[in-house]
Length: 71
Image (tube, rainbow, N blue to C red; front, side):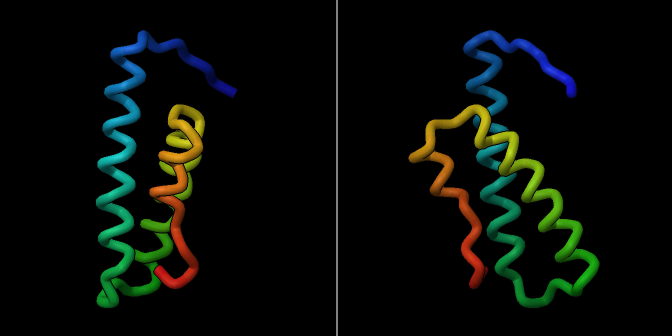
């Protein structure tokens, strides 16, 4: 396990970057034209980023980026 410490401003910037990436991934995953391998890679990336985001953000904020089974 690796740990690191962030200043408040750094944590806010990191959270912002994760949110933007999650938004992009959720939008891209709704695209029906994606084939299997690309979709799997994007879903794996989404899972990792979502787990990182859960560690920083308040629970209410995290729910906004929860992926629903239909998407």
